[in-house]
Length: 504
Ligand SMILES: Cc1cc2nc3c(=O)[nH]c(=O)nc-3n(C[C@H](O)[C@H](O)[C@H](O)COP(=O)(O)OP(=O)(O)OC[C@H]3O[C@@H](n4cnc5c(N)ncnc54)[C@H](O)[C@@H]3O)c2cc1C
Image 1 (spheres, rainbow, N blue to C red):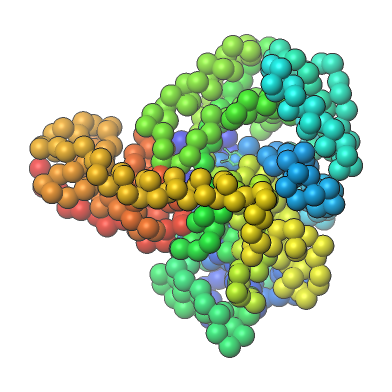
Image 2 (tube, rainbow, N blue to C red):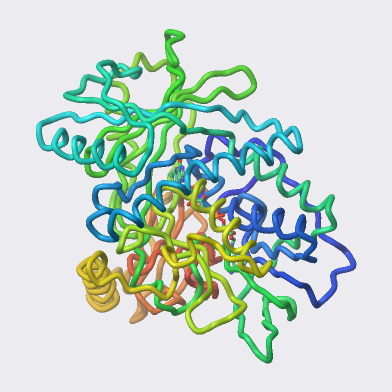
């Protein structure tokens, strides 16, 4: 199964369905763009509720971050409860704390109803501090987690072999194999009469006379309701300023011993490291992640993998690093995801900016939007409203992210290295360069063939930069990514980079 990067994740051996409905209609009750956990859960719930749904997927099922996740299903989030209490108030923090347990119950119900084999397991999660500063943070996190009503307790041992200053345990977490789970969702969706059409990138949607017109590169459709379940909302919109794209790195490894703790854990470094175990086809792994950075802003992503590998080798009796991969997530400037009606629209929905908590928030989005489309009230509607502007929480980060984007939009334009000859690009190397008066992004593959594209990102025009480890062109402005021949891998761009024909 393909993913939006060159490295293979631990999950990718799952064979996804190619099912498309040959007799595709042009009108549906609900159209969903994106077949990751958000789109497939939404499709499943809405089709089950009697809606005739079409899922349009630009690539293949699981192509996005659901294929590159680490699949913890948590009830505490990257936006820690102490911060949420400060920024949104105690009542909203308590409301937020209800989301995780509800999502886990929903996932358990779907698994039980269809006897899905997806390695689902209940887990406790441990959070630990490494120094005094982190301990202060941990104390705040602990007190706030208890205050919002989640089962946190102070403990004295770390199930993972990592020294710590203080540690807490939060019960009621879970995990699964994300692609086995969404494969089953897709199959149940199809069985109920839903349609999935692969290789269909949605390029534009607009509301007219109570209907939504949906354009893909191949077709036009009409629908009563439309959901952007594409992780990032494509094209130019307010989310460009309210969420920032990050790359995050993961390694999976086996141990010389058989000491695989049945637990999850994370430290409080910035960015933090996290650990969990997973068994696939009888083989046990430890998954460790971290080393996050803004997309397109790391010159040497290989070093991030090396740091992570060195870090885990310091603590674990590593037998073999079996997998390493990176993937993308989007951090909201005020800490909470944006889920619900797109600002100014009645029938177009957004589900985005989940930070590193998209198993929970992707499922929650599907539950919420399914309620809204079915005319039911949802208690979280206001908390996650995409029209909100939380001045207290997000304004400084919004300004910071916006000025960072503008910086890359303008400054990177003047910094492309000048080359005189294409021979200066060696095999395996990718560079955005100035060549014969044009700014071109060139990659020479291992067989010596050149792949060249125009450097200006088709979203807002910033120059893309080379991601050596995932072999992609990544935009430092809003995180759009393209493959070596310019094909969109991640939005918000929807248009491919133009191929440049260079003669050697
Ligand atoms: C390294 C890493 C580890 C993570 N670990 C966790 C974790 O442990 N727990 C957790 O809760 N979250 C985690 N996350 C976050 C989580 O993986 C994501 O938030 C989640 O997978 C997003 O799911 P999604 O369905 O919304 O988007 P995706 O899985 O990205 O799916 C979007 C789909 O939309 C398609 N698409 C895009 N544009 C278009 C278009 N224009 N038209 C049609 N289709 C389109 C894409 O091809 C893709 O298949 C992690 C993220 C990273 C990067």
